[in-house]
Image (spheres, rainbow, N blue to C red):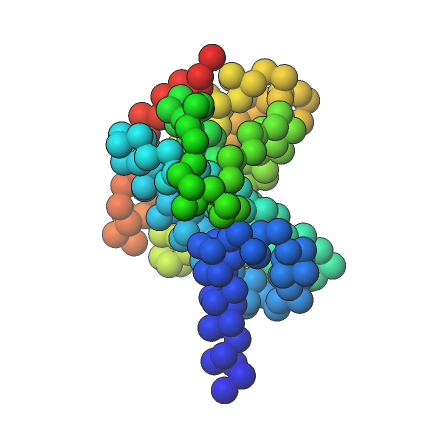
Length: 265
């Protein structure tokens, strides 16, 4: 019974945190619960956060098209909270055996890069459309509708570093899949690369607007090299094993929420 209840508890905590974030987001004791989770629970948490980010990302452009500043505010705050939850999950892995956490660690870092991209898109839309927006009285006192905190330069720097880490992890998975020659691993590695490549390109464009965020450990050149390496690795996997595994051929897909406007000047 306890094994059945734990995933439900994790899911309930995640939903309460990401969807009804006002009380939970400001309560450090609730966030500290993440540090007490086992690997299975952490994986469930990370998966739920990633799915929540994906759903809200799909709502961004429609919200912008109808100038729904309340929804853009909520989504921005939800992305920021998801980003923080993923950081807490990553921190809770410290001290655990490397072989046990490798896959989850990669998932967390990649999810943070994707969540960061969503934060940038939401901030661009909000800055463009909602600079003078006043929240309606019935929502003004809800923390999830508080004015979003702007992204800091250091966060862009960290996003570039994490994107490189995620790219390296994907390359490692691709090499392992090529050696193992097992179709599930081959297809999984190809799909992971397919998902991640567009975000490297997006991030490269985003940090071009923030040159102060770049440095020896966080360079656009590094992102471009990583993107090229992943594309080559995915193509190689497909040529050598993917066809036999009936995998879909690699296609350069677009990241979600394309068409975001340039940031307000």
